[in-house]
View 1 (cartoon, rainbow over the protein chains, first blue to last red):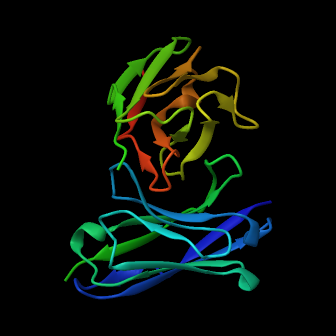
View 2 (view 1 turned 45 degrees about the vertical axis):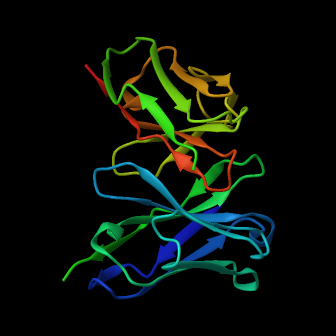
Amino acid sequence: EVRLLESGAGLVQPGGSLRLSCAASGFTFSTFAMNWVRQTPGKGLEWVSGISEIGDRTYYADAVKGRFTISRDNPKSTLYLQMNSLRGDDTARYYCVKTSGKASFDYWGQGTLVTVSS
Amino acid sequence: DIQMTQSPSSLSASVGDRVTITCRASQNIASYLNWYQQTPGKAPKLLIYSAAILETGVPPRFSGSGFGTDFTLIISMVQPEDVGTYYCQQSFSALFTFGQGTRLEIK
């Protein structure tokens, strides 16, 4: 069974930093691209960042480019999102998401809530 | 970036109704279009990928069609458990983008 378990949630002040982690199990982590998707309370889905299978290619939404860094540790089957210079509009539930072999998002974690507020 | 526009933003249907949700891409995305369902309090779930292929385990009352810029999700006979929000997503670009969502409620 595929499982994606996010951690690292919390309350942080504007301008602060936070690192999210996602522990993956139930599939061969190193053979699939991974992503982070966020959802503001009561609003829609926003793709944040993606990373290739071996981590040599990374992609970012314009809203987070230059502030967030995605990375992965394949031996540990763990995905990360380092978030710096956080702003109020970064407040959201952040989902760890597996990319299928068909360019779709086939497994989602339950999400972890990040709140940016003073 | 590729923009995705869904319509309607919300709809209300009776059990057994046929429901149609449309999604338009700002440029040609071939069949790189996926549909997701998010029920209240849950993470999104993949329904359809590559515009028309049903994900394993998804009931056959769901179907998808389209190519290029215009796509459709149809629920042939709505059930109470279909309440939630439906999102389209383009995967033509590595900078994935979602539509704004369509909220489905049952009358």
